[in-house]
Length: 288
Image 1 (cartoon, rainbow, N blue to C red):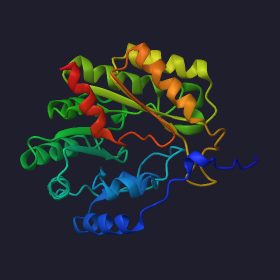
Image 2 (image 1 turned 30 degrees about the vertical axis):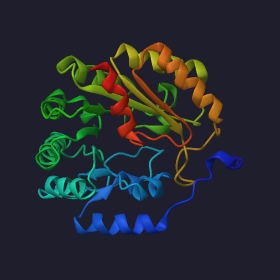
Image 3 (image 1 turned 90 degrees about the vertical axis):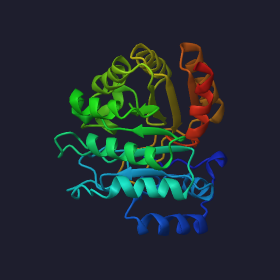
């Protein structure tokens, strides 16, 4: 397939000095970030602004999603000191909104849910006024695992559906679209005070009617917040890029999402699940 030329609106430069400084602090605490693991194009900007999304449970995933740069293979043992280290890093960065995600750990009975809960508890100890958002895997639909995270009461529980169901074989061959939707609805059914959030990528070959149906599916499963960003292949071995979506299309999708009932939509070529996440929680305060 012919390689698509990257458009002018996707020319963000990396801030290597900030990346080095943040990287050294994180390594001193034996921590990882999804910013680094997923090769996020916003990494320099976020690190310069002293924000990061913590990646817990190691930096090796048990799944083989074809859009993601995080290595796949045999994961490491769970670090019992990790929750305290996440809290220490969040305190050093003086974060008002702490975002925690993980690799998928299908090798663990609870999928890593207990580690999420411990991280939330430790952050609460040192930053009691800060809000917390967790971006969780599907835990293979394990409701007991979901209950552990829900009981820890983060302000936001995010689980990404990533793309339209027709593209799951290409992008998420080990995941199930319906199961991901049910994760979101289950969270809301157990604790209506927790905001639910999901995210998708554009450019994999999705059609507009499929995106609109996805919006409806998320709304029907009680999803409050939505992020929409441009898919950028990490390498030639990942899912092929079919299209660079113009910024005006992202804006149109944002407006359509709000019209359908999402409380908050972030949509743009550089938008990622936790990019400017503080903006989302601030916007939701008007619904309190």
